[in-house]
Length: 76
Image 1: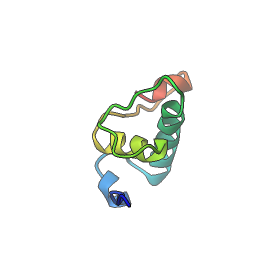
Image 2: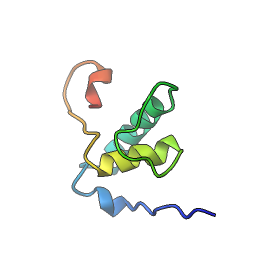
Image 3: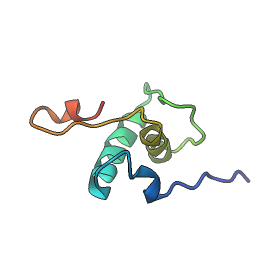
Image 4: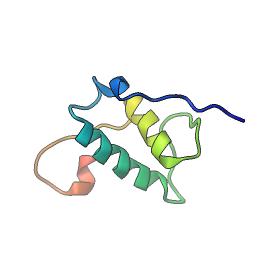
């Protein structure tokens, strides 16, 4: 049985400013990854979109911007 890498909330201290934003960002990116034609931005160690999304955020491949505008533009 394959062991999963442990991801801690503390790992995201320098990546996002709040736990709420981490949840929103991870959920939005996981939704994008769940689509059949999507590709991971980092070497995927898991098939689960939520885990891959968190690994991408940790790797600095998924960022966010705040402000007014279209919601689709807020995940980059």
